[in-house]
Amino acid sequence: MHEVRKGAACDRGDRSKRLLIIDPAREDASGAAHQVHRLMPLSDIAYTIPDKPISKLHHTYFCAVISLTAHVHISDRLYQQLLRLARAMRVIALIDKSSQGRNRVCRLLHDGVLYDFHTLPIDHERLCFTIGHLRGIFEHEARPKDIRRAPSAPYQALLLGKCPAMDAIRKQISQYAKTDLPVLIAGESGTGKELVARDIHQHSSRTDQVFLAINCATIPPQLAASELFGHEKGAFTNAISARPGRFEQASGGTLFLDEIADLSLDIQSQLLRVLEDGRIYRLGAHQPRQTNVRIIVASNINLEEAVRKKHFRLDLFHRLNVLPLMMPPLREREGDAILLAKYFIALAIQNHGLKPASLTEEAERAILAYSWPGNVRQLQNCIQRAMALNSSGKIDRRHLGLSRDKATAPSVQTLARARAEAESALLSKAIRTFDGNISRAATELGVSRVGLYRLLKRHDLDHKQLVNGGKDHDWDTQV
Image (cartoon, rainbow, N blue to C red; front, side, top):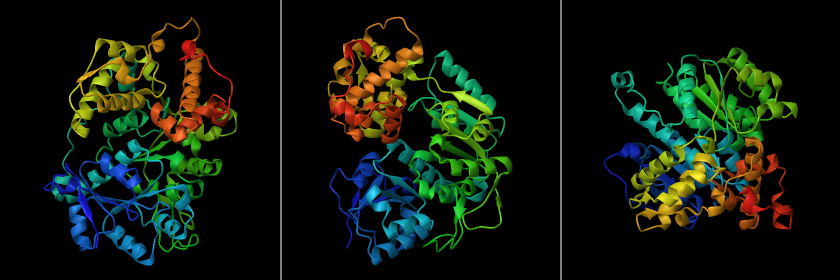
């Protein structure tokens, strides 16, 4: 017998918007499955795979998210249920490091049974994009063929901003969308690189085809070749069926590879061959397959520096750096922080049912004075937290958690040095504040765990040393 809890805001008449979340471990409200349930208002949560006919599930839910963490015992019965479910609908798995080594989880990942998997802690932004993409596929497949072929409506750009830097970005997007050449998007974490990639795709001739976004930092190294290029039946142990890779899945459309520098040198060499002639070799295959994919990549580290350190191939860098685009950090987008803050307030009201609120003049001054090392993502998290903790309808400086010393004028120095010092100081303070807890510090800064580790490495900071009495910073002058 299974139990299904309906989402409070679930519209039972709009089946294409319903998401099935399965948590066989029955974890408490802090568990991964329950985090997704709170994130997605139009969702149901079950503690076993529902036993109603699979055809009914397929018409009721556009995809399923199942928690396969170490707390879940994957019995023979559960494994067979998963196979049947995955044949009828697209399934996303939530896994952790402990579950990656278990035989049946490995079989599900290698055999292509799952549409996608996400490692914990959950990257909410990436998960929302994946689920949104699957919902779009479901709705597209449900339309009559003559409607599917109709021209798409004009795309409304998601990039907000009135500063000159963003005007220049929009002009570049318009130019880059006219070709199929590779695009390299650089910029700090949280600046909106994936939004730019989607914008380029939506303005291109490929707009009616698939846009597939992959975060290379989340792909386990041992699965990277299979994930990107696919594999044949029998290519490795438990490869009981063939599986297309991301390049084949995105053929005809656009493939966005975020955090490209996290790919190993071996995978980089394979990627270079694909960029040269469009042909991919599945693992275990002797004949190539032709693909037609527009490649857009992004990195929040300096790839030229990575090349000098032998961490990134020079020939691949030249192949990708055909159409470069640099995303400006939020601190260099004059006035845009207030525009974005007001947009995020409206978004929180619409998506999370929070009470309407407005910014006080003091809050606006604090937002403009703050350096925002986590950029737009950090600003969004800050606004959501302020609205959740405030019932007065007025968001003040204290609700934002931004101290007054952030607004003090810095001494004259280069922008690069000032930026580096402020970022290093804030990273150190966050690590100390949360006693070395990387997950909590990353959440506060508005970056992912992987992104935080990368920033610590860039500034040569050891989070254990910081907690245990490492070199201190002068917060009043540097933050």
